[in-house]
Length: 389
Image (cartoon, rainbow, N blue to C red):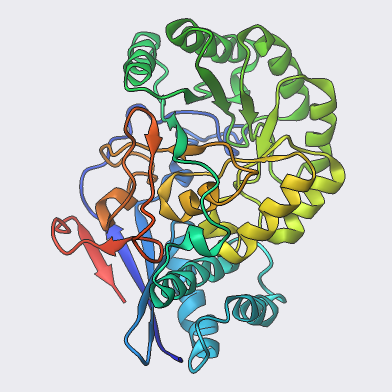
């Protein structure tokens, strides 16, 4: 079996975008003259990778991280070194791609490009062997997957309360909100962020997990004071309060608080997560399989985490992460982004793929008989996309 074609398709959204409620802390929040610190972190394009074999098998991968740049990496650097290779040799092909780009890669866009291809290769492997990817990664570890609702973008407290109550009634056992007020708003903004958490906790009661997303928006001093103020609300975790490279500050923060700390959405490969383990930085790893190195690296990181008592709860729902969750004892639950209007970009996969798992009573299920990742590309309803190869 040989790879004969690698195609990266860029899906660029041209339709309506809802931005009124997506105002929350980001790494740009402390930078002066930023009227919309969220703008740089909204993304309105997505990358789909197709890998085709000479025998006619097609595997699909994807990347949401800087899709236009990721496409250029695939087209110019990765596709040429894959042609003629056996797609079932996923371990070898990951190392070939990683080592061929290590001088200018290692993290970020290059690893996202490798991840997208790796997912496509595992999709082919599943189709050839007539097995879902989670079976190839070790099999089912739970009857279905618990998910938590991930949105709660609004700063309006009445709307926040109503949304939390609604999704509790939909059966979700957990939900995550964002910090609506940035570092530059100081203690007054911190009090407002705490009030948002208080509103959600009071709305859903004590039996629902509540998580808080900081999205790299704060510094160590703020985070210490913030976590102390959050202690009465029994958070399941506080996520990415600091920049991802501040791993030693995460370790200091972890020693300071009893609130579990999560992160890793912006970390890459087994090497990055080994550093997090060595420093004792986090309680929960949240890589995204389509950034971290694909299924090949995700499996290694899960095994490392399991040995160290670290939970793995990947960023984003999406099928590539659900296969990881279902096949690993390190992973107790999955994130779930509902299908909504386009707001920040996480919703876009619903508009491109058929086959995404839909939550029922807060849980999702993957089929034992659907081979590969389980996704196909939509052929209708694409009028708001410009698709380029």
